[in-house]
Length: 145
Image 1 (cartoon, rainbow, N blue to C red):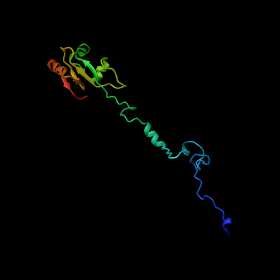
Image 2: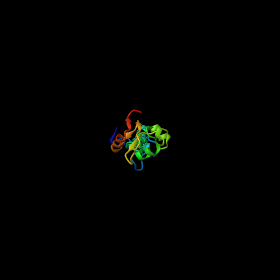
Image 3: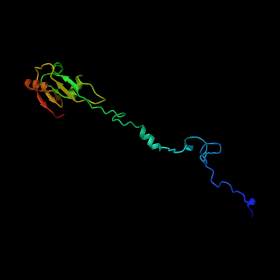
């Protein structure tokens, strides 16, 4: 073998694919789209579902405190006889209290007005003034329903 017979083998480096320019190809990733990009990361579907759930309390579920229906002493004076039993059920029957979502609500008696009759009161809440007035009139108060 002589010097003029020696041939260059050429550049043995591997073709660098997926890097733009004229000779770059898709590097085995197909063409275009999210999956063809470098550094791609597909999030799990469950994570997307979690991300969509609002983080503030009470967004979908509205838990309402069941309030009390309010009745004044002057209303009791008008609708009930002396010595009558006053309870949420009897107040509903007389039309002083209406049902809330199908149930008879708790009742709070407030001290507006005055009374001359005495009652037997069961299962109701009171304001301080109403309690004083009822005790002065000789009404019996029991907390049980």
